[in-house]
Image 1 (tube, rainbow, N blue to C red):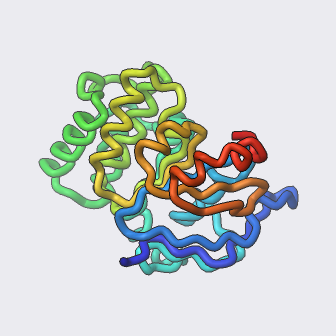
Image 2: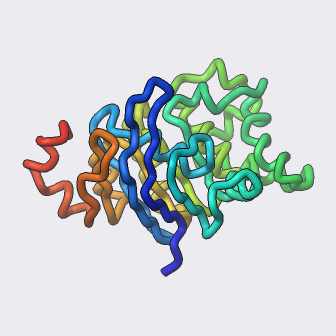
Length: 233
């Protein structure tokens, strides 16, 4: 099976010197759905930000067999759809249409292709009715869904999702889970929502204090009560 993500000896410290990631070694294979769990401050979001070069630590990181280097970043960023935990970090255009179209336009798709990509992505996240609205006038949960649409419109090969279900009401949380179950992309999901992980992910990686504590089958990890208690889960 081909590797979608390959990380070797990843170390990263924040500007104040605090260690965020310590000796991370991780392979994610094409088509896998991996849950990244751990308490607040474990390093989950920091790890995701290394997958498209937003952060770069002392390491070797490869995505789709491309090393995270300046010359490869345009291709990598078109292949890795990163959805931030805070949608306000992702939405910056005057309308929802403009935000969702931003990626396809920069991929130099035709006007018709851009339009089709936007409408398809908004249908997938059940936000078609918001196409002409300003993102700043949406609820937090609605913004989360639009953020996912901005990534889906680019048809990425890898989805890196940071707390995708937070602040969603039960209906849209259920619809998100159903959507993620249908998507064929390789997925790595950082979340505290262990029920979502149980339903979607075949594998779980537990991070704490910047280190991988365990990496195993979802049911094996989530049924280990002592392990979860020891790491505030």
